[in-house]
Amino acid sequence: MSVDQEAGTRQGVEVAREAGRRRTFAVISHPDAGKSTLTEALALHASAISSAGAVHGKGDRKGVTSDWMQMEQERGISITSAALRIDYDDRVLNLLDTPGHADFSEDTYRVLSAVDCAIMLLDSAKGLEPQTLKLFDVCRARRMPVITFVNKWDRPGREPLELLDEIEQRIGLRPTPLNWPVGIAGDFRGLIDRASGTYTKMTRTPGGASKAVERVLSDEEAARVEGAEWERAVEEIELLEALGADYDEASFLAGESSPVLFGAALPNFGVGHLLETVVGLAPAPAAKADEKDEPRPVAAPFSGQVFKMQANMDKNHRDRMAFVRISSGRFDRGMVLTHAATGRPFATKYTQAVFGADRSTIDAAYPGDVIALVNAQALAVGDTLYDGPRVVFPAIPSFAPEHFVVARALDAGKYKQFQRGIAQLDAEGVVQVLSSDVRGEQAPVLAAVGPLQFDVVRARMEQEFRSPIETSPLDYSVARRTDAESAPALHALSGAEVLKRRGDGELLVLVHNKWRLRVIERDHPELFMEPLLAGGVDEG
Ligand code: GDP
Image (cartoon, rainbow, N blue to C red; front, side):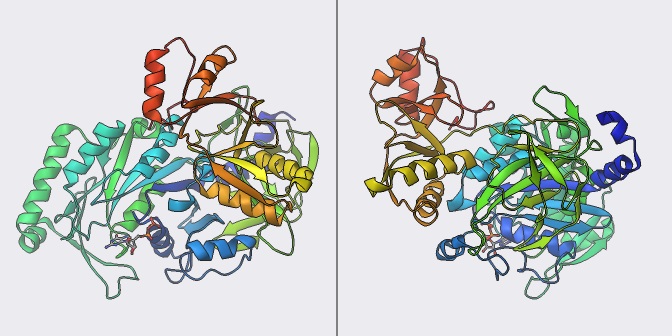
């Protein structure tokens, strides 16, 4: 049966319906903008959980025990990133965790390859911050739809129009506010829904942990109660209309404009509107293009791509877990899939769905869902698994590393274990491994987008591969792709070094910093250097 024929069967119809109910998204934000708070508020609002605090790592964490737990507790961060399923009305929202702050790593970027939409979360006092910009660059490279949520409006912050201007000027995303705040940041009175003109006044509930009290006021009432603040909001909305800053579906889906919502996650103001926006505007899973750029319809037989690998979540089983985003078909636990890279069968008896800190066993999943496959030693990030007609999805791009260390085995007698461990961590995509004739195989260079990736390597080399390592930092912070022709000349320059990436054989030139890079570019325009990810994640 062809892919199209399959799509017409009863199961195909069911799969298409289930895919249509799903919205798979992630939140991109800078540390402390309120991602954890918003995640809890969204789940709370959707009544997926009974009380805020039970969702994320920052509250009580139960369930998974892992070698990482201790590291997580010590650092107060979440390494075991997960997908949170939120049932809302007739919809299924899959919120994929993008680990934030100190644990910023390639995983953070890769999660974005597995979602259909992103919520760009801004702190009203800070606007666009460095980490938000980095993550946004990945969204832009993928032309992903982005919904903007301006958070913490209950605290003193910036002018709403100024924030919109910053979004437009700095990242070229045209903001189209869906609601507008009454009251300046820090004096949050309520929100006007631009589509309906309805004003909802908000009142904090004691403790702020439960849903805010919302009351719809008529225009006359609002004018009386809010006075000058109301007048000002009405004037600003008129200005928006004059500027043509209205929601536009085509440009939103193309990643060119962004619906903007104001609110405050902590007291749960405006979170419901965000939830409705995700359900109403974010795209449902659609056909994914394969390596040959041919789309695999969602109703075709099962296909999915590994976007994250995680090891040692359970101390008793030194297992390796692969997180797979389903692209097409229905997944039934126990089905035997084909691993595209090797052509070998892959049994899925112990598949798990991921829900908060708990892992629960699932029986069926659909496009847009994330499944976690255990015993996934054979899999690597970017790998395709399928059922029925063969499909291979394009590799997930390797991101531009910014941190580099030289790794050496502490115990020279453990050289074999050292090599095996480094090769395995490279295959899993924990770090990128670079080498050169000059440095030799004993001293590979490890490259990462976040330094925490090195901690993971050190811990796993010691505990899992029994070859403790020492790492010494290298004084480089920028990488560019180069070619065999330009490599010798670049290598000879001061503040630059050429290495080969083992994973894909790509030649990379590492440069001291971006100023040095500019000087090299200026003085040697004949030498080939290009950014590592189209869209320029590493433009600095
Ligand atoms: P994350 O690092 O992005 O996950 O941020 P958190 O969710 O941990 O929030 C960082 C801090 O900001 C915490 O102290 C939150 O209580 C606070 N916060 C988050 N959202 C809001 C909000 O809407 N209003 C106020 N006043 N504080 C908030």
